[in-house]
Length: 379
Image (cartoon, rainbow, N blue to C red; front, top):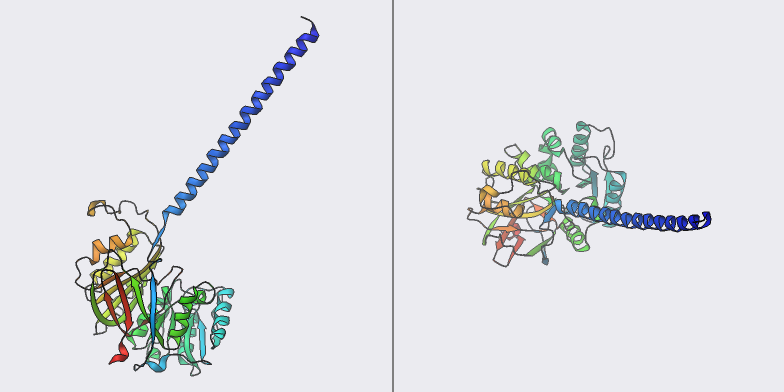
């Protein structure tokens, strides 16, 4: 065989070999890419599946509004009133504070920013000073909190709580602000469990409208779809509660709203907990007698719940827990002979309907739905 034929034959074989290598590399790359995509999708799905929310999709209807006519009617706001803008909990951003200030202006109020709202190096005393200023200044008619987070219990513990009853000014907020709601209820002053800066930027229109009207004393009547966990019945009492974790921390304090000698309806919600944390908090509330002494219970939104709770999944307690509601019902509430409603859209979800705390309500639970209405002014 001549050298030319050898080169030609070798060249063909080399071309085929290179082609095979390239083709194999191509498909190998495709397979790896597909595996990577699948792995990424599985990882994303796992991440999305780790947390879940309950109570956020409950169909709700505002069936009407009643103008509050009770003894505390003067506590509500009027157009042109000055409203203190403070943050007794975690430090808010400038954007959150500005959104609150601009939103209150749009609602017809005159917002007055506290001295230490956005001060990065503020102290506990600074937060207390802002809250006591808002209560003491005679030109201030209400208190709007910018955000929740942490540490309002410390502020309430440190403040002069006599100012609450003397000032008779509503405070607006939720989550960590639950400590304030509890102190306000003990002082006999209504407060409003509602969205803070998000009320002016993220809240659905119907929720924001209900909050805007509640600040002025127009109180909604709610009707919500029922749940498989509901316990039918009817009860009356002052509405107390808020964030479950914070209610646990204020239990047995001087500002525990479940201690006044009158019937109460307990509202609870929470976020970013796992089964262990929820079980721990509910155990504290049970052992303190707070669940047992309630005339009725409303469970709100449980958002971003982490089901990864180690061994605590309910296997040794009659089968795995299907949800936080399932655990609460089976472990803590199933033997209580009181009306219990699951799924009020209030808390850390997209919908956060406002609740007037410390005033008398009627909770009526049937198999298909439940209603919540304020009745303190009927007397």
